[in-house]
Length: 566
Image (cartoon, rainbow, N blue to C red):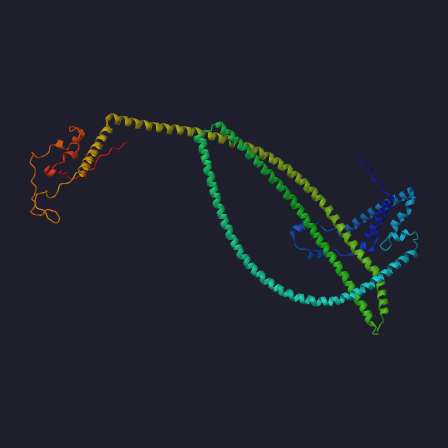
């Protein structure tokens, strides 16, 4: 531990001087006791008329003490100050007994005042004549400064007249500018409304686009998830252990994220509560500052009014005698009026400053004293709430863990049951497909045993043969309408004379002239083939050998049979 600081004699006498000043400013001056002579009802009416109606502010506002309570507190404070002054005097006496060589600096500390400083007392001659001479020198300097200030006042008066004319011109310009500003504000308001409408439309379009984009993104993610799930369940066939492992780790990760989010929300709530309390304290202090500003303003107005009254009285005295006076007489009268006023003004200024400081200190002390019990109670309540919240948090954590475990076990059981059902369905589908394939194989075997495919091919071969005959018949040269004769021809065109006689109806051929059925058979084809015997087109063919021309029957318009493989 460090050594305690030793107080010097100068510091002891400075403490004694501060105690004397505090006694003089707060207790020994007569005006320190004038505030207890006013009526309490008038002050309450002034406070209610000046303050605005605010329920929250009135609830937080401390109750105003009566005059008797404040007087008792003032007297107790006076006793404490007197005890402190006596203790400081005892300490100074002790230092003078121990170190008498420090007597002069210590006495200089007690002897200084507003007009008497340390330089005046350090010369060694502190007699009243010497001090009066120094004060007279200061007074002469003040007189010279007054003369300079009067000359400056006259100069400022001339400049004030010029400034007034300039201010009037500026006032007119300001009015013109204000009108233009109002017009510009109106236009700006209209433009802003249009811009807000366009911005709102843009926001709506942006939100619509974002909504569509999110839907598209969600649909794509769902498709990817379904594809991944299908690959997992149907293609890769992930086992039960892998599913249980990833589900457990996903549950742990989710619980960790929820815990972090809950802790963050608790910190934010605690920060908001502290911020709310500090904000209310700041509002209260700002309200006290406004009330002090109003009190200072009233004092300043009263001081200005007194100054104006004194100046008016001086003017009346100056205009009382109508004879012209000399400049020295005016100076003398001003000096005589100034002499009694100057100390009073100094005292008034010091009184105002000390009164304001005292009021501020007392108010701060009262507010601090009154805020201590609520703050202690609030701290206790917060501690209790914190303990209760922790207990509730522990209970909630346990409940969440138990419900999560139950939910997890139920999910696992449902997954297992679903997996068993899916396996049963898949096995049933496989069995059904196998039965269908077996039935089709049996049907094909039965058809092969019955030679149905051969019968289908027979019909196809017959159709192909008929189509081939027709194609071969189309490729042969057709017979002439009129048979070629050996008649005379035209010497110019080398053509025979046509239509030389009428063409008669051809006679039907005799049975001996009819061609046997074998004449129509293709080379290499079996006449006794069942395919040719069963063909309908072969039996209807007729061949006319007159003139080497074949005559084909009209085409068969009946439907042909085509083989269809199942």
